[in-house]
Length: 449
Image 1: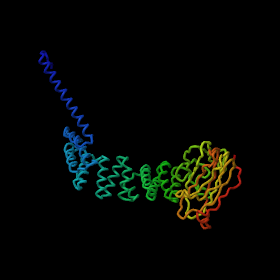
Image 2: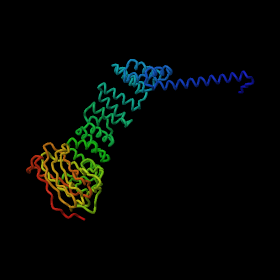
Image 3: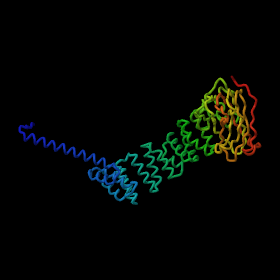
Image 4: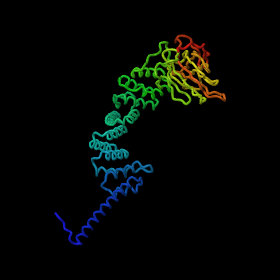
């Protein structure tokens, strides 16, 4: 079909119609932009005007209801409820609006209406993790714990990012790690590790150990480093026997060497035959300015290698590594034995062994003589008796900063064959920690070159 615009008046009329259409589109665009700007302004009057500009847009009424319900300055539940009702009337198939309406009714004390509105949300979107999560929290607030945990478990199955929150809520509701695990934890290593991290944050070692038992019994693979945060808390809280047992089981589960020394020493990897793991009940050797560390297969006292510490000569270093936490029995005597070799260690302050309870760092149970200059392999030893509540000791290679003007630490030290062997349980003890036997230093022994 053709339209002929043969007269000037017809062409003017067409232009006028086009102008009106363009003006209407421009007006609508400006109105929509203005409404969008105002609804996100966090100014109540502007937000209300936005909803008035777009009265058929449910999202604006829901947004206004949330502002009224959760406003920092003032909360207005009745008005919030009124806006939510408008939202669900406009868009009755949007689960989020039913949830907001349900929470508003709950806040106003009408739990039965809230329950019905949650049912509407669940009917609209039965597979939604968000809907199940919100409903689970409603059930928790109503004291319906088993039903709430079941909803949480389903929500976590649909959205694993909810697991940390679910663990937190379930723990607050049950205070029972086994009930928590049965109710909401998937049988995966990742879920058990998440729960362990939660209990590390709660500093609840006993609860965490029950989660560890489930992880160990599941025989699922995990990385040993994932246990370090929880084990750090166990060490801080003096859980020596439990922590060491968990550590040895974890080493075995990860396929790492886990045999205890044949001489009964409580020091693991005392000869540095295996790489340092930097956590748990293994050696820890954090990076440090002024020192580098490596394994040495050419100079060692026993076995196949030692740990070599090289000091660059640029710092007056305070050394407290490598270190290891070891599990011990309370009120029991132990004998420390270790070997250090030095080459050109500068200043009057050398390297030695320290032993103490990490909870009381100002009370050193044992410190051996220090070695400066150049020495062949030298045996440093001494006796230590644990306190009545001590279950963990810290053993470390230590150096006190020099008091000299020329105080920069240079040279090299080798460490090897460190052990802490308990005295027979039925034998005499050495008294209180303050009454230690004097540490001794043996004549240098020829090492394996």
